[in-house]
Image 1: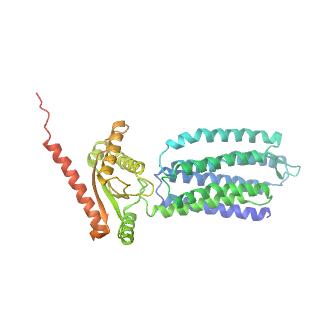
Image 2: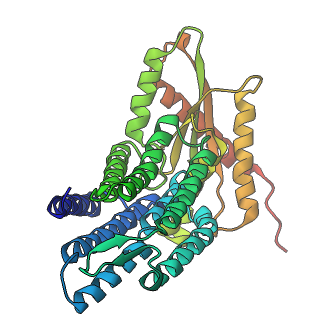
Image 3: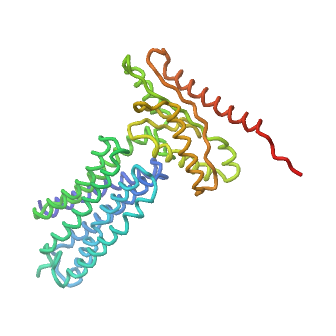
Length: 387
């Protein structure tokens, strides 16, 4: 494959990434941490593509100025080549949690690898470790490229561990889609190392971004942008499918949850903090329920969870355990607001003859009863006597 074909591949990849980035800017909700990292992943890949194109165009041109330019370009490429991979690891670290805690733990180690690689790149003009230019200003690989390959393998291992740690939170089919963007750039890198003239690294990165974009776009149709939970549309579809296919002996549980005094949170602290309260409620629910249990933001500050009860566990016990999670959140006192919730819960069995809307109305009615019961208890409680 000659340089003209390579240049065409780079241009096509560049245009595809620019198109994806523009579409994200105009259509995608970017509040969630994984989406913001995905955008940065695209930007870092675009920067490397530009450097690659410039290096390919200048390769073999005579002159000392071109020689210096080629050295600088290839040094920047070697220093920056790990950046998209590190950004993707951060994407994996925040994928199922949506926050920055795991990223803070990951970055120091990744930064150490990046600095070590950058130091080795800095020696290449003198040691020919990673690359060198021959007398005709043509790029040649150095014997030390195996070190860069080693860095990639370490990053691959880290990514594999991150996906493994989230195995309880991420469905199997989603885990496979997370692995593909991890492997494709590395496979492309190794193929390009062993086969001179192939430009498979850029193909691997571009394909990984395309897969991530298509996956993300698919999820945006059914995901609530604020919490990362399923939305009302997906809940309706899932519940109808579940009721249609349920066996005669099967049953499942449902909980509807509403944040108490949510209007007061908005009035006292503003709508940004109110959004934070909804986000934290979603995080508590994701941490409490298993990955195969369906959690959706129903409307406003209301949530619905559909799940199977464990052997020997009652629905009332499950609801009490959930309430304890919100009590623990309040005890930590990390937010200016308290999260108190009202719950409506019931068991659905096929013999009940209830449709999807009827089951949701039942949960809503029971939740309202719980809310009114707490309000009555508060009103009936003895008031403190002021002297």
